[in-house]
Length: 290
Image 1 (cartoon, helix red, strand yellow):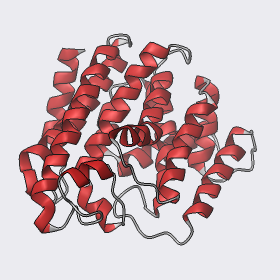
Image 2 (cartoon, rainbow, N blue to C red):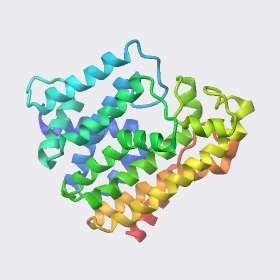
Image 3 (spheres, one colour):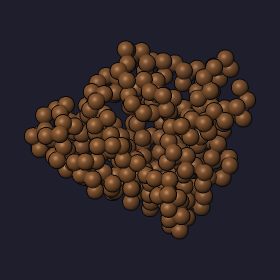
Image 4 (spheres, rainbow, N blue to C red):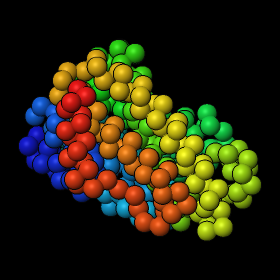
């Protein structure tokens, strides 16, 4: 497959999988935009394989999560090993993007380690556990996206701020998806938090406990806000268009977390999202802030 075909597939993937990331990615220069799409498509494909999804949406019970994890690792290793016979454009695109940006394999391995935690039925017990999980499934992606934007792989200070943005995004996602995760048999609210409010494990999305669960969502949003502020500080180290895109994305996801808090126990009546008009507002605000 030519690079143009891989980029077209990645563009379609982000259009289907995340309107928020698609909006922010349009602010990049063309080369950075295409590389960000290629990385996103691989992340999205891995997530879909792990959770039995199609570009996100409702998770389905998977027959053998460890086998799916092994499939993700095998396809990734095959792509990064230069095997020209790979047929999946998401993984072939990763090989192209990784070569162009010199992406360290450790970050890819860290992301896959996050899928391993889910495959093993892992659940966080402490806030540190929660943040460690968020690093694996989102902070590592933030580091890779920063390198795609031109940050040097050894610029630890800037990568730390990029990681913060990934943590903020994931904490917002966890707050928004409490009911959806519960329906799939998952819970990312730390066990200690649940115990503090006498919420029985696995029952956090039941109507009787939603007022208390809303307090935990507020706690998630507060932690997300700390990491968002840190990421905004780090954004000043990026080129203007990259900074614009990062600040736009931070605004969109920060708004999701704040809306979950505003709706309280009704935040899970329907999925919280940012409207198209609101996204355009964050594009304008991101430009001003940049």
